[in-house]
Length: 110
Image 1 (cartoon, rainbow, N blue to C red):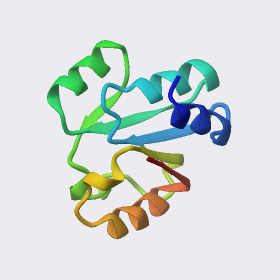
Image 2 (tube, rainbow, N blue to C red):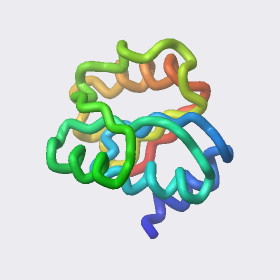
Image 3 (cartoon, rainbow, N blue to C red):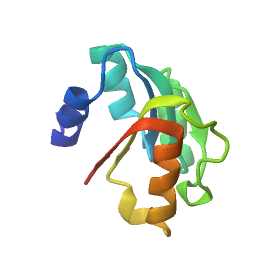
């Protein structure tokens, strides 16, 4: 198991409502659902990865992280996670503020 997944598992509360930014094929979200019983969504831009994640029963929204998180209300998640995706964002400072707007906690791993 990836180290960032192990860390996220320790930092996220059981049954939390989670938003996974740049979720790829949903591996982290699936892991958190299995281990902690979390609910939530993944955001991804790559169509093949989206299809794989949806095929595995995950709820995925197709979205470019550079477009921000305006579709989500304030405090609509317990935790927002972004693993290995921050370097791909054009305005990380703007996205970080948006992450803190939509969730009580934000976790970023590299």
